[in-house]
Length: 559
Image 1 (cartoon, rainbow, N blue to C red):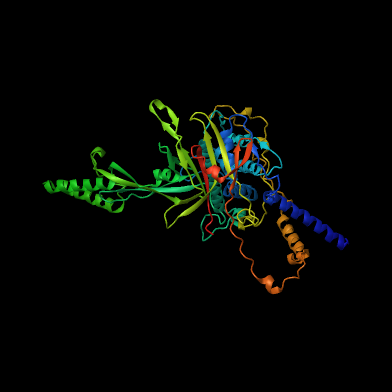
Image 2: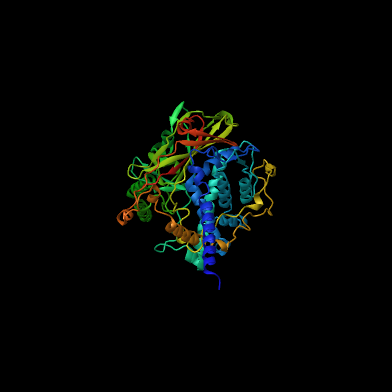
């Protein structure tokens, strides 16, 4: 029979190692980030510019500073790892009827770019002791594999790169969602247990959606008949705002170009067209002496009345409405509003001026932008906080991109959205790290050619082929760490005894702890120009009015 004391010692040692591993995995930078006096907190990881990569580097640095995006990437990558591989092996085509190639659909369901971006942002969010720079090429390689195209490095646009990445992440999110819904319908046990639904709804319980995806809707109101069209809703991952050709303006004025009511003349109103056709038929029927014509006219009038009452935008197909050129012209008011507010609002300030002969110039107007951005009506207003900025210096066809990242101090409290186990992770704990994308490691970016649309060979390796490993040794990590924490808390002396005072009374122990005060937004930023990193203040960021190109705001909590 083994020695009981030795068993206890062995268990305590193993639990301590597990707890240490847990602290290292989930809080590797806590001490450094909170050590405000140490010289170690002087830099972050930069990105090497090896082939005109500043448009890539600036966007990646800005994305690395978005906490909501990192939470999303962690959730999506871990979700695909802990679920049954059969969930994503069944290819489910989009519901809109658009058929995707098998290789592309498989990459979407596997979350190819989602995995690659998480790896890159994890590397950028390290806190190096000394100056450090890495290459963006591993993530560029992920994109090239995902699209089977080469990414050109010849003076590309940061907004185009952001749009490619954001749209791909959104498509991967919806592809994974469709695969999970399809698996639930097939009765796959693993999915039924991991993704419980509320009240029969097909939405995952802990699913907050893709954080950059929002929706806006627009409708038109005729100023003559008063008819308002049905709202037309569109999704977006970034908003493009046109900068007016003035010496200086504001971000709110740029928003007015989209969300301010616009009046348009000489518009063909569908309601007015139906009413005019009905009136003409009534006049002709009153003048006619033909009973057959009157009967046909009366039948068409009834159809028009039905369409006017139910849906003027769907006129009866068998009723002649006349030439559209002779339809009545009306003045209409077009109104657009944001119907779904994204948790991360990415704004592109379009500075292109198109002249005669396709000559394009850059609009260098000053655009003042706030640190706190309120959006929406008074009733449903949302408040956003500025977390990232991408600036551009130079002309329209050349120049240099830089990024500003707010120095967000990690909260000393648990992040329930990221690391606290929920129903979806109840059976299997979060793995220590996502698998390394071994197929993407390359020291030379020269593999990429300047031809953006050049096809990639069909036998390109899939970086996720061996990515779905399941390490059974981590299954008890959380429970062991929790028990170790409990044991250590019992052994630790009361905090008050460290100061020589007596132990608190039971009444004092039972009092609820005061709620921590909400921290003020950090005034320090990182200014990143490829490999060069230095500190900046909010005033410097807000002063980049002529250079501001991309803005990243994060939705503030309502608490």
